[in-house]
Image (tube, rainbow, N blue to C red; front, top):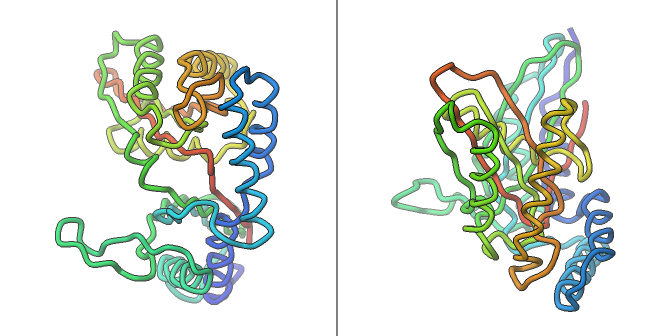
Length: 279
């Protein structure tokens, strides 16, 4: 049984919080640059270039990509042959507390959803935990901004809706969102499971790199079709028109009950922030 120090978790989570907010992934940067090749709109090209410039400044000066430094969502994969000398959830929250304080990141979490009161350190994080084989710990920090999160939706559809019903649901949700999630967006889609699990799938889908297709050819085709349909809406960067409404669409699935047909859409803005480490 391998031991990992509590402090190691704290320090790595703190670093991931800062890096996720400062450094836009190269896959997203490449996706933005590639989108310029297909853009006819001068306004759309100008916006995309501004987004790229913003990412360059954030990286060089180590300042947040966006003023909304997000709700800290953590995906934890815990090996069955490793342990932490303390509560790992506490260590993750101590890491978030350290990262958001030392990194001068905006604290956006209210301790009570109705009565308010800022926690002043962006804790508690949302932690999705999974046991896996081996003696490693994988931690992915994915700050999620309120503007794009608000444009997400879940639908408990009818089995008869089928995949065409899901496609229409996703495209219509993007149309309803329009400029609110700061396009160009990345769209995570969950299909199957239960009411709560399908939303997890949609959010987990956003961890993929731009251009990374679902391993199932059927769902890879669904992703391509949805991306094409979304980009034909003409919403464009920041909702001002153009061919680049979305940089990519990712679909994750899970077996479902014969009588249920859950689907969920989780939208991310162009700042697709997530950083991982394997300890």
